[in-house]
Length: 429
Ligand code: SF4
Image 1: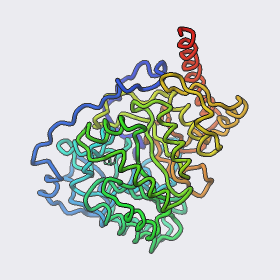
Image 2 (image 1 turned 60 degrees about the horizontal axis):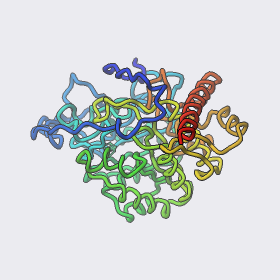
Image 3 (image 1 turned 90 degrees about the horizontal axis):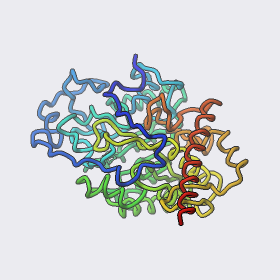
Image 4 (image 1 turned 30 degrees about the horizontal axis):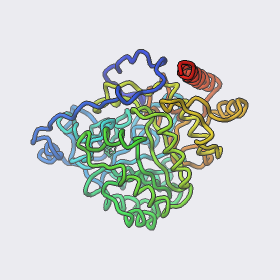
C-alpha cells in the first residue's frame, strides 16, 4: 500500500514563500532542454526492446517498459487506479476521485516540450514515456477495454462523475481520441466525457466531430496566462510547437460548438504572470460562456522548472477567490483593483460578502469540469496534483473549519502585504 504522495527527492526548501507577494517573471525562467541522444528519441528504446504488455503496467524501474499504444492502452491517474481497484493505496483525507482521468499513451510520448510538465519530450533520455510522473503522480497503463468493462459493469460503484481524455501532442492523438470517445459513449451512459484537447494538431472540424460523437465538455489547457509566459514555457522558448493564437482559435471554436457552460480553459498560477493577467483570462473565458480550471504552479520533478518555487500561498488563495467570484458570483474584473505590478489589492466587494464566500470554502476546492454534486463543485478533484498533502493548494474534498481558517489567514497575509506595498508606492509618489 502506498500513499498518493510518491517517493521523490526532497523538494528544495523555498524560503521566503510567505514573504513573496507573487512569483515574478524574472525569477520564473525554465532551464534550457538538453539534447536527447538519437538512440533515445521517439521512444526508440521501447520500440527496439518491444516487450509485449500483459495487463496493467505500473511504472517500475525494475521492468522494461512495455510497448503500449492507444487506443488499446490508456494511462490513468494513480487516484483513478486506486478508485477503480486496479492499484492498492490510500489518499490523504479522501477515499476516491470523482474523475477518471485518462491519458493517451504511445512509446513516442507527447511531442511537445512544455517546461512545467513531467510528460515533456526533453525527458526521453532520462525516462520512457509510460514511466514519467505527471502532476506529481505516476500514471499506470491499463488495457482500455478492461477500463470500459469495469465501469460499464458498475465496478466504480457510482464514484466516477466524469471521465476525461487527455489528448497529448502526438500525430495519432486526434484519431485515437475519437476511437476512445466513441467506445465509451457506446457502452457507458452514466459517466459523461470531457476532452482535454491538443489545439496544436486540431481544426474546428475536429472540435465539431468530438461534439458529434458525444463529448460533453471541451477544455483547452492554455496553462500560461499571457503570451510571453506561453512562448517561454510551451512555445519557441523551449523548442515546443504550441502557439498562443492557435490555442485561442480552438478555444473560440469550442465556445461556439459546445456552447455556454460546456467548455473551459486550464490556467496555471505562479509561472511569472501577474494577478491581473490570470484574472483577465478568467474574465475573457467567462464572457465567452465558459469556466476556468486553475492549477497552482508546483515544480514537477524532472521538468524544466523543477528548480523554481511553487506559487506562494497568498497569491494562490487570492486568485482562487477572485476566480470563483468571476466564475460563480457574476462579479467582474473591472470591479477589482490592482497595484502597478498587476497584483490584486481589492476584490471590490463588501467584507461581509467576501467572508461568506471564504466560509463556504468552495472557492478553494479543486476547480474543473463539474460532476453530479453542484455546478461549482468539480468532478475532477486531482488529489494532490498541485501540492503535497501537508500544504494543500487545491482541496479535493469539502474544507473543514481548520482548512477554512488556514485559507483565510493566507488570503489576509497576501492582501495586507499587497495593500501595504500599494500604500508605500502611493506615499512615495
Ligand atoms: S502538451 Fe500537455 S502533455 Fe505535452 S508537454 Fe505540454 S503540457 Fe505536457
